[in-house]
Length: 115
Image (cartoon, rainbow, N blue to C red; front, side):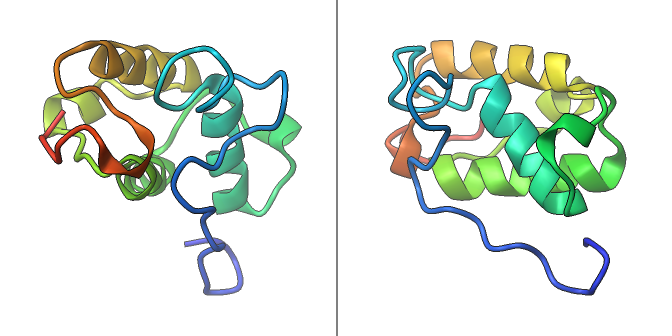
């Protein structure tokens, strides 16, 4: 949990970067883009996105997965989580998951399956 004892509020389903971003609705397909992942991690650490390091620690990973599950309605399984050690690998794993059957989509349109 961030300093101060309370978690930042999460945007609702489908929230993502504005025009030109790579989040939902930006033409890159369903699921989070790099900017959204960095924004989620920045919110956890109460820091600007440019201060988010490439590496993801265990608390950041728990926050990231929680936010992805809240926004997209699916659960990320342990095997997928174990591969999400950097922003780049998190993006890669989530891209793999969203390209499969029952892919991640905002609002949980992926059918609630474990990814």
